[in-house]
Length: 366
Image (tube, rainbow, N blue to C red; front, top):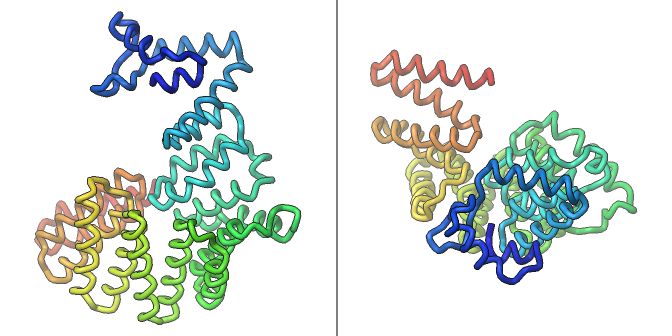
């Protein structure tokens, strides 16, 4: 509860003062900050009030959800805005918010959150909406879970072959081409991937930084597959600069991780160390650890492992596994768990080595 939010929903102008009176009267309110701006009610009391509202005025409840959603959009609290739009079953409004902001969430590997949003939308509605299919396809490709992505890609292909479904929208077309390039890269078809990426770059709107950076990422991967080391390196550097210019640490880390891994593959350990260390320094200064951090921590661990500086390698592998476990993105946890097992083996600790490899085996079964 917030005074401005309550005013927006109820039409009152004195909600902040009323909330303060309720709090000082010990009427179920708990403050959420030191300034007395935000409160919450006791969960049981909240459930009771919602049940009463639903029984007395179901249609009015929908209106309240919409007002709340609009307020949260203006306040920049998009996750809450999406939740209220879905509760109101205003799927067109909800999918617009998801489509606008899901790319940022997906880039940070918050797949479960986006999956939860999309799971609230009826399948028959999704079947007719290009944006919804784009988000689903993108989500499955980033996991990566290609069999799950295929139905959405096939549906999109049918939609974009029908001029009545908005295939002239350059932003949608750029997303569609990017999705196809991701699949082509995964299938090892670098030549076609490069072609589609260049088409997408011509179409993507100037302000659509997320999609533009994803296109560059697929370009870099395709150059790698084509053994064009110089162009791949330049493209990863473009991604890093783009992230730094826009203040997007996730984009910067994606570029740093890709460039660092490319340098590692070519034996340029000192260059990889320089790139990855700068990325880690930036994220640790920012105080946030997006899930992609697990990759850069792990790559730094690999460098120390190669240099036989085992204590530092152990530290960064453990850091990588911790971030991976927190994010729910288990691929890195698996990979670096195996390397950590090797590390314990080198150090002569066979029991810990066996424990780490067993953890990885157990993760594979999940």
